[in-house]
Image (tube, rainbow over all chains, first blue to last red; front, side):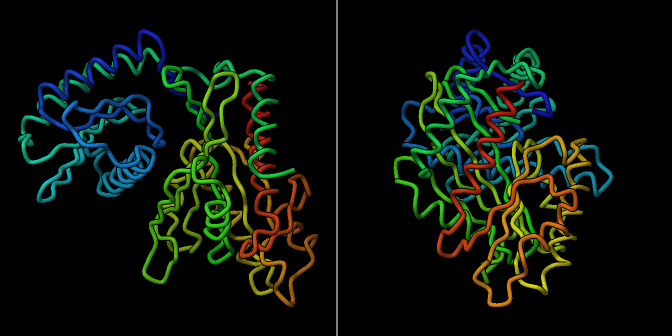
Length: 163
Length: 195
């Protein structure tokens, strides 16, 4: 517990979810996710019409790794940061943008959603999410995990990996 | 740093397998992937070169189950071991909760073990973390190597104060793999519970 963490719950989670929902509605994208920089999913939404997304954990991990590598490249080139990340294939596209220091917004879209529209509404969503994420930052040591939790988790380790 | 998602009721921890090239980090993950039941694991992602050397990282999410209403998940990562890939190795350490240092027991890899540990300390320092402040478990892997060095000798080089727990392993056959993972996981849990 050495870095601050974002803990989204209650009202903050609901607000983040509505921002993602609105983003999907306005941009016509398939999926929208809020990740932390280490690749953990904080919130995600899928358009009702969209097919099932690929494994979210894998997506989030790869996008966070990709974003981290991109930032490292920016620094090597003397830029403080590259603000956005855009990948476009024949059918699918992926757009990622920083949400403050600790989080990332990811939008996955197909060719029915113009990229300009995704970026426009994506940037708008980032502004709203940045405020929510800032409010949800918790300092190390204040995450509220107790010894009962630790003991329960420890017993599950034995169950899964053997004694 | 663990991440708590109260709305989805999940707690996630990040564990990174570190160590010199070819010491068996990916083999550890592969063993876990093979042995853990389908419903307790996600996809294993490997970003490797054509000759199966890790290029960026390997990733495996493991579901521990539900504790006090929270789904608890460990995200296991490996780093590329080759000296050449330090820039990407550093990136993987961001937000790490616990580290398994996989050392190679072969005599000609003793120096590589030491250099990798020094590199780990340097990379942690770049995130403002002292190696003493984060759970680290050592694994002396490839104990089946015919001329394997004594475990004490390996530890003397990578952990001269003999402060860290060390496990003997043959990751290709699974020996010591779960023991190591359990030990680091327990330390991580103790640490967050202690706040």
